[in-house]
Amino acid sequence: MVLYTKFHKMPLPGMSRHNVVYQFRPYELKKLKKKSIEESAASLPDPRSGHRIACNESDIFCFGGYSPGSEDTADAGNLFQELWKYNIFSKRWTLVIAPGADDMPKEVASCTATIHGNILVIHGGTGFPFGESSSNKCYVFQTSAVEPSIVELEATGEHPKAQYGQAVTIADNFLYSIGGTTGFDYSCDVHRLDLVHKDWKCMYTSKGNIQDDPSGRYRHGVVHCDGLLYVLGGGTSNSVFDLEQIPVFNLVSCSWTHVQTKPDEHAGRPYGYPAPRRCHSCIQYETENGTEAIIAGGCGENLYFTDIWKLNIKTLKWTLMKAARLPRPLFFHDACITNNSCMYIFGGIQVNGRSWSRTNDLMKMWVRIPKLSEICWDAISYYAPNLCKLTKLELLRLGIPKEFAVRINSV
Image 1 (cartoon, rainbow, N blue to C red):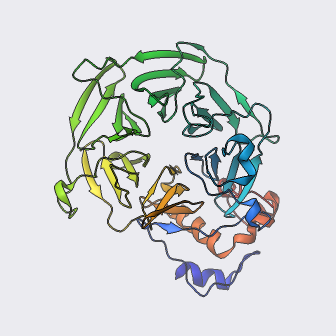
Image 2: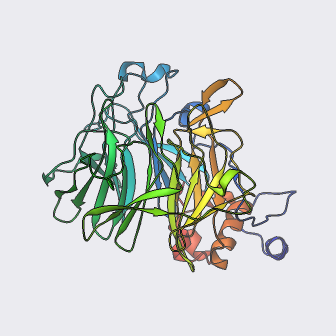
């Protein structure tokens, strides 16, 4: 109410009228309205699954994906060989790289995407039919480039197998790739890419006959903390892995162990653990209580999930986020999180009774309380979305701090 009153006394250019007062509601999942620069359905990302999203403080990038009902991409085997960008302030989508662009990979389903600095790094993936052609390459995209392009990263060393459904994480200047499938075989191998020297190293090859070696898997999550990689869930075409005892890889000793997690005694379901699953989303973020991970949705053996769980890596305790729930069971979607702890979930296959359909819904949830300045900025984006029509200089003259003004993509 304080923000609402102040805005009415000191209106900003681009303010819109709202009958509903802005409210900051953390830990609740909110579906965002669909907008694009052209305000037409053709200029929005098509519903899809198997895509990947990654974000910085200003934009969400959506790469690749698949849909059997996409007429526009029939020549590419129903794959989306494209890159979209969603500006968080203006809440608008733009197509950054269209299908047919030079160096655009063909393996754009169940790849990985993560942002390191101002570089979007894409790794692995499959073409269509799934598993017939897979990739072990990396591609990079400069998020601040005036002329956008995707370029293959030329790397030396011990490359991982060409696979899809692997999980990656970046720690320091290293990208770690864990697991994946060729479409026939599943692994839990660990490879490391030195992003500075552009050199791959095989850190571990799963042998299958060693007790601590985790089973091969795909569409799992991975979290890094204090030199350890925690693998969350995943599965094969006919199995899923539990989230009670989770595999942990030590980056110093290059060895696997398993750790026992702790249940949520108040979850109100058997055992207090998330059910075994694959094709869920997984993000990590830092809190005053240490690193935490959030998994959402996914599928099991003839089961499809709407639940959202949090795991504290320090205490290894699971917490069911009861105030947050996906509107429908969802899998083969993806999630990302900004540095100010706002999580976004996009796309996937949603289940409605006995029918499945792909979606292009974008959802948002604050997973912790950010700085007051971030809450104020979120309120400004609610009351004055048309600020995106102003130039950076005009925004600065209004008194918008530079750190926030640069987040707006002017239209």
